[in-house]
Length: 455
Image 1 (cartoon, rainbow, N blue to C red):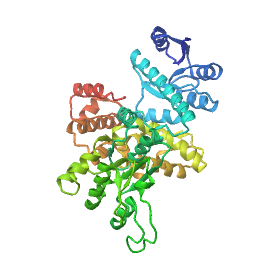
Image 2 (cartoon, rainbow, N blue to C red; image 1 turned 45 degrees about the vertical axis):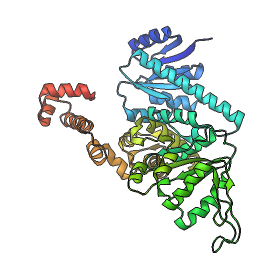
Image 3 (cartoon, helix red, strand yellow; image 1 turned 90 degrees about the vertical axis):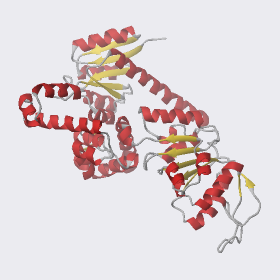
């Protein structure tokens, strides 16, 4: 088996030497270059499995190398290295086409971990492509875009339970992608060739919901001039997604429980039952345990639905997915709107990663679409974003306005932001900054190191 080739682009000889030594020991063939122009030339001329590229270099910086490689159709995954890396830097880099980023100083094992993760991602993408060809079905987790640990745990659960008929209960805030997860369950299962039917239990009037779910016989009520199948029968052999299950009236909760227990439905106005084979996936933003305690949801139905619970984390708990999602939405809307947006300015990237996203992924999607419609150039700026997001760069205001109740976390954020403001106001004079902050010079130096504040 041939060695995997890695391009290392950094203007510091010590970094090139260190990476060459450690990656060589790990079985990689390392090709070092000293500036961005050499890096782009090497990527264009040669074939590499990966590239490690510094952000700040002579000739061309790391972002320019990524842009140039993308323009020339180079498919090599590029991992950006930066001594000034933060999530905003990562967002800008990923929006330009970088695979990942890593902050300096780093350990050799951390670099190896990132490269191994890139290998796994490539292998997964290849497997998804192969399965699509073989099965002709959507097997990309329903279009869900995520790489964060919380979502990877969700994906692992989906793969384990996809082929079972057992009922799944999806919980999470509005906009976290519960319907996408339900689709992923369906299209990754043996039911993929049968219907996937979604229904919002809170959007259909109560007097029509029973007929909608279970169907009705001719003459069952005024206006029922013919017999009609319900959604359970329409989904026979497939999946019925019951969104906002917490809105289901108590009278229908009894009938849904009977369907789940006995695997048969009875149309309104009929005395005969009909057997069905339907997997039910339910979703709610409500706390169903609390609803049971308040008498608004049946306890027996709750336990029948909650066999396989999957909780979807809010976007604020999966910050690392924001760059991927932005890149995904920019590409989608470029195709849909006919725009030519190439990426984000640093101001836009900073605002996007600091905003708490109460509306989750749906709100992010809407914000990117709005920004792309309003943008004057080929790069999104902070001015293209809604005002509420632009204001999110004030970390103190954003933190206090969020639902964060941890005194420890809030104090850290407030202290770090006040230190940054004091250092900015004093032009980096730490003695004067300590006076403004009303702390000792030693305490300030300790906190600067603890919070990794850039001077």
